[in-house]
Amino acid sequence: MRRLRRPIILALVLAASLGGWLYVSLYVPVGGGREAIRFTVPARAPARVIAAELRERGLIRSAWAFTVAAAWRGGWRQAKAGDYAFRRDMSALDMLHAIERGAIISEWVTVPEGYTVAQIAALVAANGLGRGEEFLHAAQSPVPADAGFPLPTGSLEGYLFPDTYRVGRHPGAARDLMKMMLARFDEVVWRGLLGGRSPHSSLHGVITLASLIEGEAKLDAERPVVAAVLTNRLRQGMKLECDATVQYALGPNRKTRLTYEDLKIESPYNTYLHAGLPPGPINSPGRASIEAALHPAAVGYLFYVARPDGSHIFSGTYAEHLRAIARVRAEAKAAARR
Image 1 (tube, rainbow, N blue to C red):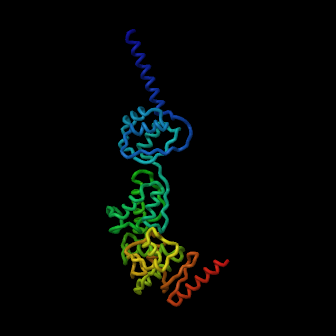
Image 2 (image 1 turned 90 degrees about the vertical axis):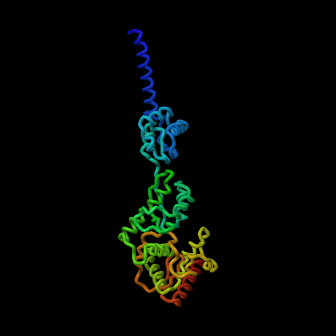
Image 3 (image 1 turned 30 degrees about the horizontal axis):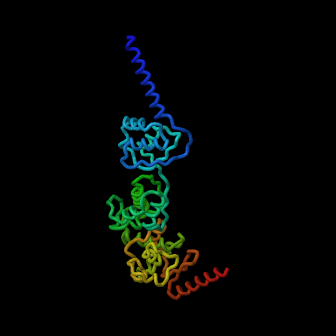
């Protein structure tokens, strides 16, 4: 018994020492301070690789202990790739739990009304949610018919509803944002404004008209009147002559002020050259513009001219329109002299 006692005591001491070391490695933070440190977990990264990176950055005490704990718990297969916010006052187990449950960093992203798909793609890249080119390609390619409303056959231009979204920072963030925007369109427009039914003119026609209203009107009160002008011109077979469609045709070469040469650019979106609505939406219209497209004001105007402050003067005849143009130019000259 005396011969056995010594090895047993030694084994107990070693076990206690190992247990204490594991406890400290997994439960005791490396230090204080609540400063958030961004840490990226790549897709399908093994626990040992992440453990080594955490140890190298001074966030955990032992990569081996972290790896053993990940294997023991068995939740690493469900770990979600993405960006995490870790602090040095967090234990190794706290970080392991966060990765296993996918507690990735998320942030609010606002997509303004009137943004084009290209501008949304640039916003995605600017917010670090993915590559803009990939978002643009996905938005211009056919998508699975998992939306609750009739999707267009090509580009999603006009159907990515402008709003504020909370998006997690992970490799699929851009796709998630796109799905959220389509789901919001379904909620606000398709089921909300349209009650889940196609309007008389077709959903695509309404959204295309709404995008023109969005591009032309700056004041909510004027959107139904702008809608009336465009609708009246369509009914009479007049060209829409909408500056916003020319700006869309110019693509990245948009201008603050169009020239007469710009109005001659050959494009199916140039409504100075082609009658009727353009082939599709030219931006992501907001709710007010879509409501205006559905319910234009009951007025007989056929023309409008913009003032420098973004408001418009509306006219029923071409002669009135010419006088309105002269008035706006006179107001601009008077303002320049002040």
